[in-house]
Image 1 (cartoon, rainbow, N blue to C red):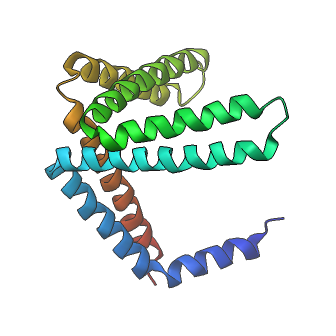
Image 2: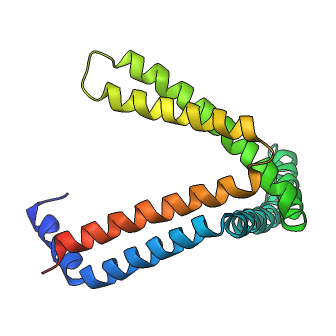
Image 3: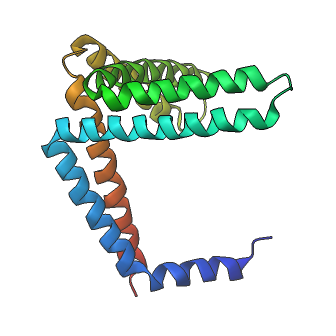
Length: 183
């Protein structure tokens, strides 16, 4: 149950932490600028992070699969854990090749996302907001085409640049929110 009291508490808490939110935003903007200034380092860092996450998750799933030993999902869970751990090991010990692989996966993801958004935009076309969805679809498809046309050469910078852009836009959002709630 959400009432106006909950809304007031939320705003009061945001107002009280506006300075922390501002500093968080500034931190994200600085981190984003650094990621864009040093895209190769940020790409390799992101690749290593994904690799370690997959490795630890894979080991956890593999070990956890033995808790369901003797059941139907045991083999599939066991295999999923091994594959995740293997992918993690590959990324950790081959970050350059991992960055190439992750960049291609990202391009394919953008292509499918753009195609999905395009279909969605055309289905909602008579209603407001369809143009924004269409623009997003075109941007996703264009980004996929740019990545694929430059692949594998762009692999060492694409992830870092996208990460930097994401940090900057998130940081700007926090800064604007903090300014709006400043007492």
